[in-house]
Image (cartoon, rainbow, N blue to C red; front, side, top):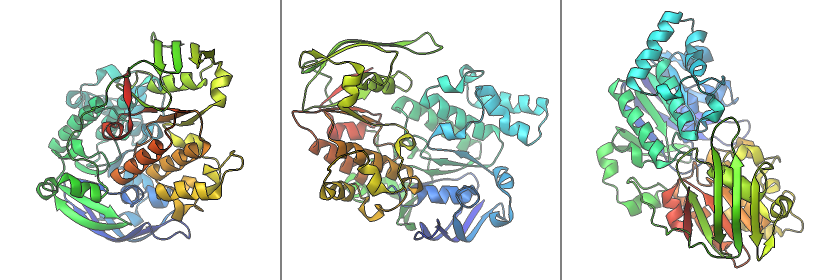
Length: 456
């Protein structure tokens, strides 16, 4: 189905990000690419779907054949008839506001009749009972609902191959298990699944082969049976996440401390739902995890605490003094869930020190080294992988040393080694003059770093 021979890939004058990749993927097979962030997993995915060369402007060597067709000889739209995509950030997938129109967009573009479109839509609903997602405003869906819609759109397209790039990175465990069931159904339908992923526990019942990618090359190939035999400690040394489901073991918030949230109330636009919290306290020197399913308002809570949500009604005190929104903004820093919104400069080194006066270069270098970014310090942030961008944003917040530090899904798209590096660095920032809040679905990460958790 997919034959790759001696694939190499490079962007501009940069060193090759892929070197001598050769493998075959059989029809109906599920293969997993895993390895450290920046190792080249997404580049393999984007070589197969044609985006690396035709969209990102990369130079490719070697051969990729899909159904015996060399993709070098195919236009991008011709590749789209063979391969459909599920991206790490589902927002990059959408062209419509209405969910049903989004599902049907590809079918319109390939010229299907209304009758044919209705047949495919009904077939998809027989496989995935997601009627509740039809005729909805895409911008009002939770992250999990958006990713479910992306997978449904990939199935309805009719392609035999579906490539998925970190599909679970921003999802809670409930939605990850829904996606797992969807993938099982796709495999039962004979679809070929090619997946790049760090959070691998939910794939262990689905995957046929696992490719460990390191420095742009295939370091090792495993059958599912052989991969399951690898001890957890060896997986960690390889930079891989746990292959078994991890339970959250952090105790709940003790509700005491210097920062008192007497009241926060925020009404969401266009829906009959609001965020309302009262009588919470947080202690200086502690790290708090904020957990709950997708769509409950965890990111909105961070924005309210920081003072970014002008419409929020809040009453927040620090050491007995009431803090206005502008007061909180002055003492806060944030790593956003979508870090593309907060990368501004043309190099990693300048990005992490942006707007910070009199910062010591040795301090910046130390953080970059600990986050495995120092060797790339002159690269443009937008040329990095998703996990590397996340680390750049984290480095910039760590350099600011704010009194209130906020992280929104800081380990999305992150391998085990970099997850633990981030955990150690944030722990090093703990002091009796700071409070750190972390929104995360990553239970493995929260177990390593949080003192207490707040459940929404």
